[in-house]
Image 1 (tube, one colour):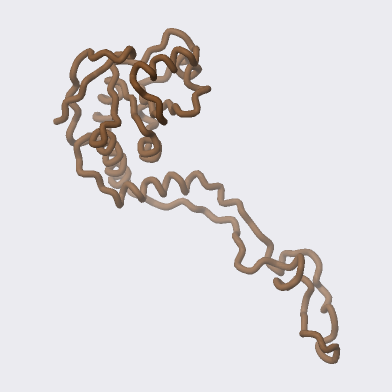
Image 2: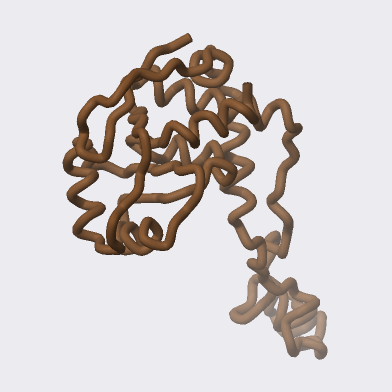
Length: 207
């Protein structure tokens, strides 16, 4: 069990919370963590890149010159790879980059990422993250009070309209619900701010 201070949005300590060692205190598995990050990034690739082979380039149906007697090298088509506007050899073709990973590995990867956040003191637990208005200025003030200036991941139990509108213009802030969290987002953030209810929701699923 790991104790952590719970702050309010003004940066003042409210209470302590005991984090589950099964979620936040495991020994991180770097190999599984790498595979999970690779899986997420591969899933973001469209895989629609394509080049034309010599059989797909238009033209080139006629032999450019006769086989013998010209003194030049023999050629069968002006769309052969060595010709200008010829086909591409071994060029990229549409493909699916998805890789498979079982459920236990995905959970282990997420728990490893969360454990790293605690180990590296990059975790901030707040009692709630309610904002009174939808102004970006208010969110900037809250982050300043929490001493957060780097890339930050904010995890809440449920999104509100004010919260969404207050962070949408901030490039260094990512906002997610607890059930949307993934390994890549956790690893990419320099700091992670999470509400008490979101912690309980994560532990309920992962513990």
